Length: 266
Image (cartoon, rainbow, N blue to C red; front, side, top):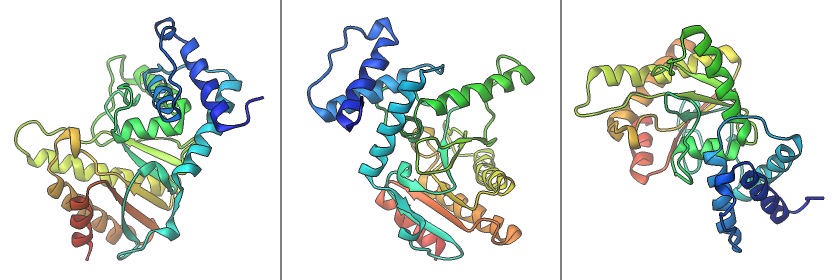
């Protein structure tokens, strides 16, 4: 019987290692934090596919306790600045909202780089392997319709369950990639990411939403311009749709991003 968090961790490392011959010689560290890193790496590189009900049950119990360890952040813990809009600085995988937004890549299968600190990696890790499997199922259906070379277009959202995240759902969306100078096309595509996500949530009856900073970071969209587009687009959407969304949270990591968003919303 696997009942403690340490037992779950050891069980899961063995289960994921046993899936691949290439992992058989990996040395399992004694330190708990190093074991957690190893498990995350094994989850990150795992291709989508079936997993036994026993392993999934242990994984789910492990990840839900990890969520409690990190601390679940609920809406009443986040102050409203105006019109249902908030800024929250921290780990988006802690937010208990109807939907969180994942800055995805066009393959829609998550980040395969072990332990990478991008939002895509974090969300897929703490949701569990079911999320990658669902993304894969949806992309296979789209490939049947549009051809095997199909990848997800920029600004077209894909919705999955949140699985072991505090968020009920996750909206996966590909933002514009800025190579060279910022163009009007980049700006239009980024605005569409916000509009299309809000439209999807409204159709699905989702009332609270946490946006990450779409396209900043490795996609190289300048932070200040991205924040201005995000806030102005969301405000414009609210003017048209009223209180269709009860709470909209802009999730940030950096101090300068927090200050920028707060200034734009006042």
